[in-house]
Length: 527
Image (cartoon, rainbow, N blue to C red):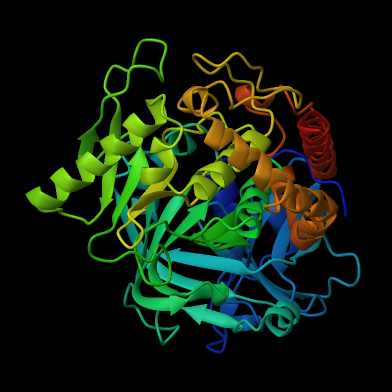
């Protein structure tokens, strides 16, 4: 892996340099898809700025135009899918205004230069999702907006290498339109998240397709998430704890796959392509009479106020849950869902240890607690906490687990929680929120202990530690590329676990050591 440094800000072309470039004679060869000015290297080097575009029409196994990067290290960088051959890559050299100065065919198995600039080709190992906008200006407006109201229409093309296709049984290509050359816009991006939207360089998006597609074996649907993991430079916490949740038996966990994202040919980094948490036969499979809640969300569409006097230091100014299902609930459904939720809250706060299991599935509640405690998730009882009522057994069930990119060591002091979240040692979640009351309930404590030793928690933890290197290997070269572009500076709330480092693998090493110490501490103290 060749060293790549910080992104160099592109300088604007001067009038004199532009005039010099246009003195080149424009080619009239009609076979060329993009007529050029036939500039020499000397003419190109006389410009204050140039870049390289790799066209999809002239490069086999490339599904979108790809733009080069200059990162201030004396190289020009091209990032291409693994299946694009390095031996004969067609490129166009452009000026700042997008004029095509020259067309070249390079063999990147050998050293390639334009004057003193060496061009380096790096191959992606993960699948690549290309999103081509119908109007790039709309995309720029969208990512600059804080409201997330702007929708950017375009087309999606998801590409898989031969190796991954054979290994996982995936298609080689997933198109949002049946004809790749169609001008019809068949997909859209829209901002998602709260701090993840406003707090970093890697935005997260909702991806909507006009036709339902089974992307990478995750089930057929129109609605997807593209998670930037802006707060997780390891790119792995959501994956690790999603898999751990599945392994211990928490139902309806979303599907997740790491991919590379490009928008209009520009590399955006490694993202998680995930299914949405929504009521659907292939996702959260509920039916009439069931209810789906999100506890204390930032914004509630169908807000249910509940009464609790013990969970917050101030007594809870306005505890709220969002009724996610049914959508547009009738007055009768809303009232019934409210009564069920309040019964759950009352049971948690009751001194009767048996009242809780009359309204809540204790195994579900215990296993959900374990994921929150192990991961040190300081939002363990609010914001991204989901639960559903199942009419068949008349009980609340916890899950799915979601939004774990701030787990494992974020510097955070949770109100009412006597714990340091930047240390792997100590009980973190047990003394906060509703868990303060739950750990006064002997029936819940017995379930927590049983699930650790007899319910598969301990074995799943050991397995997850043993699998850490597998998660790293699955990211391949793309982990380092994402770090180079987006992972240099730890965010303020991450400085408790991450040092200023020089490579992705140092980030990964810090997280791995922290997680191993966490698991070892829990196991020692459970004994």
